[in-house]
Image (cartoon, rainbow, N blue to C red; front, top):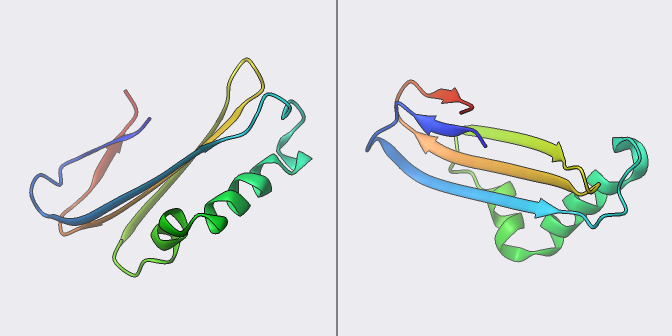
Length: 89
């Protein structure tokens, strides 16, 4: 997962959505798994509120398919009043 650095205490709001599919998503991303994850976020009021929020001025999205076939999605939202740097450890 990416981590946010360089923002220190100059952030105002942070939100994150994390979702995963079952083990049946072994085909390419065109198999509808990513759409099902998005639909799940939309159907969940707290997750959907993160997506629609006016507060973040930075958004990060990541996708990973593990060796069991599960597709993992993360959406990170932050309002930061600084020069933001991202790194993947």
